[in-house]
Image 1: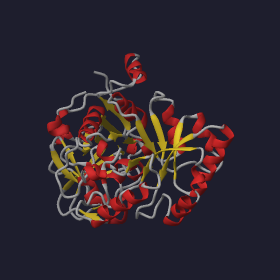
Image 2 (image 1 turned 180 degrees about the vertical axis):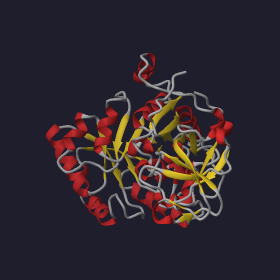
Image 3 (image 1 turned 60 degrees about the horizontal axis):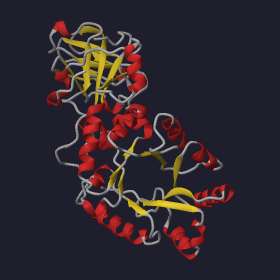
Length: 400
């Protein structure tokens, strides 16, 4: 077994088999609807290239990104059968890049529609696109006024092959919220303007709202990566990300000693403090100051003091001395401290925890059977890995 170089301050373990299993679970709930995947923001911080390859091997063919640059980067790793859909549509003047890199724009406004139509006229052929309509989120998509204009002048869509009409749910994680049904009714109404187009409404949480919301194409994101899709219910998804930080040093402090910036925490007894090489520059949010928790050899260790740029400090008074050596790995995201639990302590959502995970982590992909280049690197000894303790993953039992 190869070992991750000791110089890595922290290790982010990403279980690709869990991603595959989550995709299967979501796809299984959809009946005849197609299951796509949102891989925007570098697959929610976990690595779009390897995530997309794993999902492609599972049969996923619709990949959603936010920006054109994300789509261009992803295209070089996916076969032509994969459709890469850019949800923000085209930046002004960049429409031709969509053809060059085989990406499909989501058209969110009449100005984007007109620009795409001009390119279709230049190309003298119909160009594929998805049209987004605003059903109540007031963020992106054609407004009621724009849709009225489109209804009056249907020739605005000449030269555009609209494959799908989509919208986005604002409150899908709250199944009892009446906003869900209002948006569904509005979506059904607006779809009538595009009689030949398929529908796409459900995100991760929308899949769990039931068949009425599934239409033809779902586009889950966070649930693929282990985030709970329904508020207040047991999470059916498998955890994907596990984070371990390395101890830099430990020290013993007397009672009434402050720790960290602002002296926001003081010891009430003789205490042992461990400094760990993870901070807000790595996406460990400052809102976890004095309220986060870590585990060392299964023993809970509260975070004390403010989160610094490059470090956090733990009260490890109750941890065995033998487990506190420099370089020892501390469990930060684990089966006993999940992404959703961390998000609750931080006053945010699991999406933010994942997408904040920083670039300085050594990334360790488990069960990576889909990236030929990565396997070649392993064979050449260029990818360092160390054994990942299965106990960290709780009952899921995935090993390196």
